[in-house]
Structures are given as structure tokens and as C-alpha cells.
Amino acid sequence: MIKILLVEDDLSLSKSVYDFLKSFAEVKQVFDGEEGLYEAEMGIYDLILLDLMLPEKDGFEVLKELRDQKIDTPVLIMTAKESLDDKMHGFDIGADDYLTKPFYLDELKARIQALLKRTGKLEDANGLSYGNVRLNLTNKSAFVDDTPVELIGKEFDLVVYLMQNQNVILPKEQIFDRIWGFDSDTTVTVVEVYMSKIRKKLKDTDFAQNLATLRNVGYILR
Image (cartoon, rainbow, N blue to C red):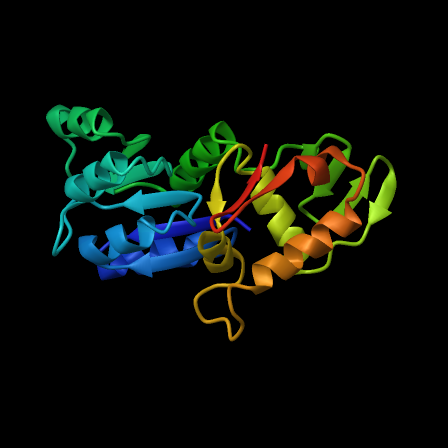
């Protein structure tokens, strides 16, 4: 499922947006710039919705620090600051889209979908594929050519995450935080266990052959 970080201190707006987003995404909600930056730095989100007028650290500062750290997660600014100068500054420091308040929730969803499609995070009509491995994200089914392959629970989620981040080095800790979450009662070593399972189930495919282990770092699907 798509993972969105919502950084917004307006409680009434934040609740309505949060409730709306929950219908199609997994959402983490924070209320100030410092916490927003901390969450965003983890690199586990597909999209960041960022207000500008935030306590602790404003949205411009958050965005600039993210881009200075080479974190390229798409950022959609949503703010009451509607001047051309503010918009130009937002785009100059790395914003991907800019939405002024008040806005319709349907417009927000349309902009989110456009950004996710552009970055390859949203499935197309045929789902996701890598070589002869195909995934249907609607019913969580997997195929090698036309033969079904049983990818159970986190196995499926992990293959999706790898396909959506081809040629990106994914540290084990980042994979663990994304797939299992901070509240999991297991440990980061579970990532190695699941990678082994996936390699066995998808053996002799380009996916398995191009899934590389980077010692003491993590994994990359080339």
C-alpha cells in the first residue's frame, strides 16, 4: 500500500485530510516541522504532504534540508501561502507540486495520483512487473510467466517495494521500518529471512538474479 507522510499543524484540516487519505493509503501524521523532518529522513514514504507554516521548523526549511540530504521523496506543499514568490521559492528548493488552501479533497487525490504515477509508485492497469515476474496489486497475486507463485503477506509487500525502487540502495533498517513498522516485535534480521524466501520462490528469474546483497548495508534490485 502507498505510504504517505502528512505534516500539518492545523488540527481540523489535518483530521479531514488524514481520514480521506486513509481510504487509499497508509498515513503517518505529524504536527510540526522537526518531527516531519525526522520522519521524512527515514526514506520510507512514497509521498510527503507538507504545510509551510509549522511550529519548530517551517515547511521551507524541512524541504530544503531534505533536498540537501539528497532525499528525493516527492513533496506536495499544501498551504495558505498563495503568493507567486512563495510558490516559486517552493519549486526552486525542490517541491514537486503546490496546492493552496482551501482545496477540494478530490483535487488533492488527483494531484497525489499524478505524482505517484510520475515516480512509478502507483500501479498501472497491468500492475507491476520485472522481467517475467508480474504482480497484481489489487488481489496481491504473483506470477512467473503465467504460473502463479505464492508470495505470502510481507513477502508480497517486500517484492512490491523492491520493484518500486529499482536501482536504489535500500538499507536493511529502511526495509524493516517500511515493511514491518516501528511497532513490530521482531528484529531487523527478519529482512534477511524474507529475502531468502523470495529468492527461492522466484529462482531462475531475472528478479532473483538481479537482486543483489550489499554486505553490511542492504539490498538493491538492479
